[in-house]
Every structure is written in C-alpha cells, then in structure tokens.
Image 1 (cartoon, rainbow, N blue to C red):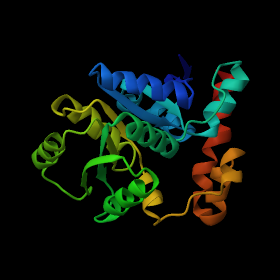
Image 2: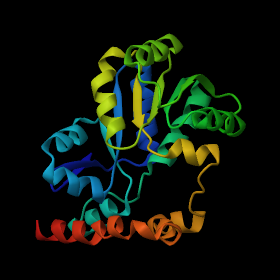
Image 3: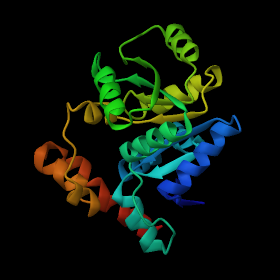
Length: 235
C-alpha cells in the first residue's frame, strides 16, 4: 500500500494498520524500518540518488508532512491522513506496553533521552525501556554492543534526518532489533525541552504554521511545500 511522488514511495497505511503490521513483525522476528517523509525530503531526493534509495529502502515511509496528503488528494490517491513521526513513536510505545515489548532510546544531547524515558514511563507505566544512550557517543562498536546487550524489540534513533536513517541502514544487520524508527527531535518534545503545537493546529494539519510563527526563519523551508505540489501536478 504505497504511492509514489517524484520517485519516492510513501505508505498509505493508517496508524492502526501500521501498529498491527509492526506488532506482527516483532512476533515473526522480522526487521522493519520506518522513515518519515515530507516534501523537503522528497525534493532533496531529486538531487541526491543515495537519499532516494535510502528512503525507498525503508519498509514503511510514513506521510509525516501535510504535503504528501495534499499530493495524494490531487492524484486521487489513498493517503487520507498524516502519520507523524512523533505520534507513530507514541503509538508504538503504547502497543509495546500492551504486548510487553521493550524499547531503546538512542540519540539527542546528553540527558535528553533520559528525561524522555522518564516521561514515557509516566505516560505508559508498564512500558519496558531496556536502555538509553545519547547521540554524542562516538564509539560505534560500543553503541551496537550496548543496544544488543539491552535486547530491545524496538529502537528509536534521534540523530536528525537523514543521518539517523543512514545510521539505521548501516547498522541494522548487526543489531538484534525488530523495529527501527528515526524520530528526529521527538526526544526533545517528549522530554519537555521543546513545546509541540497545540492539538487544534495538529488536527488541522497546521503544525508547520505554528512552528513558523515561533521560528520565522523556517520560511525558506516552508516554501518547499508549494514547490513540491507544483512538481507533483506537472508530473
């Protein structure tokens, strides 16, 4: 269940469908890789074949940006809603608590993943967090060893995109983990260091506008949305 925009695949699964599929991947000991897709990444992939291959290598390419939803509507496609990286992260944590699966948090600045871990346990009291490691550790062998010793079912990687996705692809074959997700700045939000847009903005697909109000310098990045939609229409 995928659509293709300018050469980049985007999954049309809902949150519930994704959670069921990923739960089954854990039960059947399969490896899955989730990547969040937005217009900025799709446009960047037009100039970077390695990035395009990386995005298309993923098992699930979730439509994180409203641009993918709008483009699907223009094409008469099946993508009905955004599936944001942070909400997918939380949905997997909720399911992990229910099914007794464990998670590992890797990335962000020192202390951030620890705070995110504490807040996740407050939200999901029975959630098993098998380990936490900040993104400033440079010894790759130690990182892989630490994660494998913790034996998590799900690994969330917060190294920024696309660095986190490249890291996942390079290391997943050496990791005894079933589900991998690059989560960008999600640890910062869950830890409380960064404030997320209010629910109304998120429900209306205007989270980008809220961030633009708070961070006007993002205007150049936000201009990628109309450019992306124009390219899709021309295609």
